[in-house]
Length: 200
Image 1 (cartoon, one colour):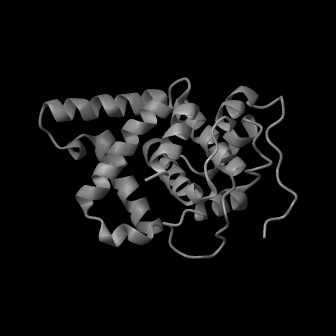
Image 2 (image 1 turned 180 degrees about the horizontal axis):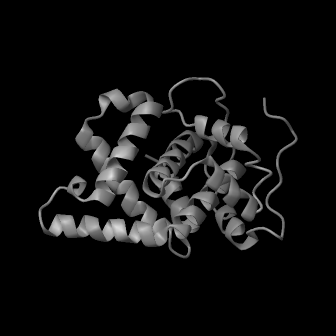
């Protein structure tokens, strides 16, 4: 049973307008499993595209006044381990709504920081499609796909059931999603997408 000592929402010095936008629609408790899986994949795509790690995520958490929810590496690891698709049981915890909102804000802030890189990758992807060329033949996309696929294989239970093509398609879909999440209002777009996907 969860402790009654819950972290508070960000204070007025934090991203209160963005936070308030995310409180207007709340998920059902049964939707949280799906939401935490989707959020972990968004962060995985960011890791693979921008080659960032937990330090960058914690730095953004501090900038956005979200430290009550994401205090340190262990807290971040436990939040991401709450993804039901992850290998291993150690450290897994339930993700609550405030923590999910925090990860949304962190993800979108990171995406906006690396928007130029994400935009360039998506433009190259469109160019490859027009030329009927495989994305992995371009270094930026090939490196991203490799990093995403390798990290997914290391962390996720279902990796062995997915083909290389399926992993590539997932990586590219997430890359396109990141472009939308990097734009103004991306946090609201991601939150609504998470709620919508959690219904299925």
